[in-house]
Length: 296
Image 1 (tube, rainbow, N blue to C red):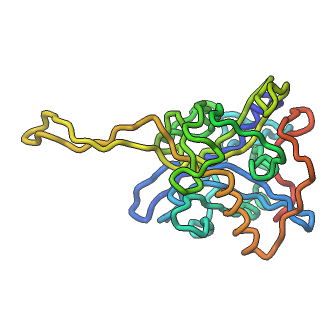
Image 2: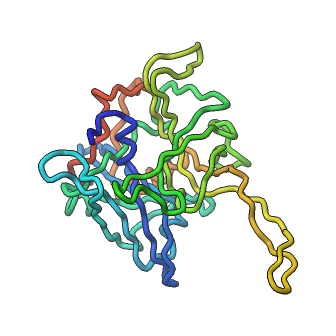
Image 3: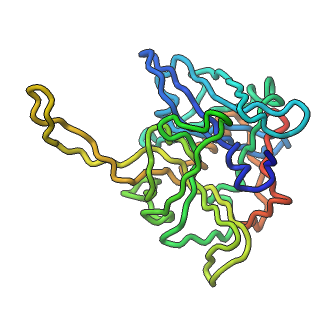
């Protein structure tokens, strides 16, 4: 498989996460790789996910796809599992903001050449994109492992699309979140959410020709409506169930940036100042998403 387009590269930006809880129960979630350019020239590779995906863990396992032996291409169907320190993650300073970061420098330093990844540069985050135009309704793309499902033959994730159900630039209920009109299930938690338009996209003064890829958020939960329904189960006349509303809650780019900044600051390092005029359009010939090559 030639990973030569932005869309194909997105398939390898995510990682399936298995959390074996202290209770012995195993849960599944999604994470995605982000790398931050540091002021001293190094990169800081990070795994972004939700707090609830990595919390209360006895064992934390990330499932990668192995890199080809002779070329920088995925060895589809061949996995490479990496077990992480279950206590080595950092959450957003606000308890209600469900965003977490796992530093991945030790992983890339030890087994990085064996992993096929396409880590997202921090410059793709909406907070870093200068002049980003956001309409009230935007088509969004999110990538992950809903209900822990994936292509078991090739080990690739599932890509889904929807639209924003609340504006990206308005904090839902006063929290750094927005709603996604799309099916979100357990396992989707931690999925990156993108504006990903190929060919053309809307701007403030009409249609723009090109490709736009912007990281705007991270899936955290699904909205449900609780209810009581009659059923025929022995002597039980009614049971309580939760009906999914086909709406997902995502924390926005600002919540991601604040979490990353907190981790970088705690490490005693500084990020490299962004270049002026960061582009919204992505040229696949020049803006390849690549894994970090030096330890951060």
